[in-house]
Length: 426
Image 1 (tube, rainbow, N blue to C red):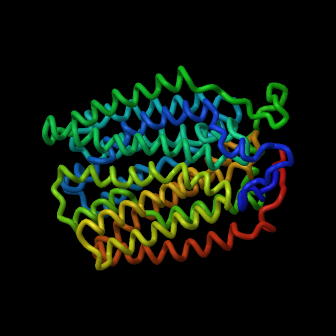
Image 2 (tube, rainbow, N blue to C red):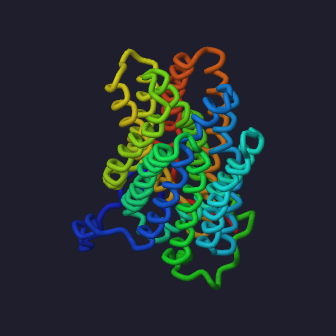
Image 3 (cartoon, one colour):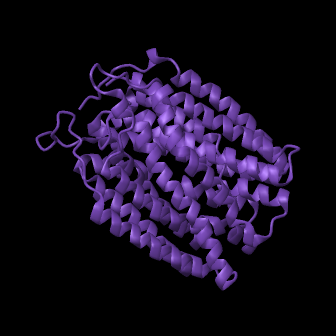
């Protein structure tokens, strides 16, 4: 399998009807998975929109403590992505493994009600929620790659992430509406979030189809994926470079909560308006995800990812720069949404053609795990930098880190000669 599809789109074959393919719709399975993600993100973003306020202003957490919890939110259970990915490959039940993950995240919403004001309990509940996300992410993305021809992966992930971002757009609005009706009652937000998450599990069970992963069209006669075969991915250059690049990119990314808290401090926004900052990011993500996915198929996925992280670096500079008022909010949230639109699904679309179908879920999980573990480190370090140097200096250092990471990523992935045909030993 050639990685030339990573750096540039696959050329049209004679007589294949490029115009027809260009405008072809994505598969029904991608739409079903997008619907599940949309509903789940409404639930998740309802909680995410109020959690920074609840922890920092309600429970008076320090920036370091918030950084640790924020890191747990994304990175502490990252290794379970690999477990979920390997289990899905070995037992060939990607839908089942993904369903377990979605169900765990739904149950965690009720756990926030029981945690009360206990920081350890809140951390444990957040960990359970992230276990769910870690278990489901790789099987879900593998189902997308197995439901889509390689030359259309950018479009497929763009459509999926666009639907996902609709949920991210609606979630903070739903949290805002709940708080507007019931006052500062976080419990009401958590209960509503659980009900919505449960609906997503029902949609997954009813409408998502399992996909065969056999490269020759069938997998029933193939031996089960072994641990040696799955983790043999790290012994070959292309996958190892992808995992290392993803980890570097994760080190350059601080949590959304930090970005929104910096904006809230600069603008002195009222607490009830805080959830709407996430709405601005999600709106930009929603509008840009599908177009940038199509662009990635046409000009290459790596240039789009690099452009996304460039937008992230500019966002960090804006948060410490001279721009203020509404121009700051509009520019920062637009660029932040563009960063997510250009990197979230496109990075997996970049990795997909490199990974053999038999171990693709594990490979995607390794990429996601490298990025998530690095994000955990980044969140803690940024919390320490905030406390030691102040928020403005900390965000300037983060912008410099983005620039350094982009150089490293280009050195790792830009040369096609380093990304060649290979096969994982069984």
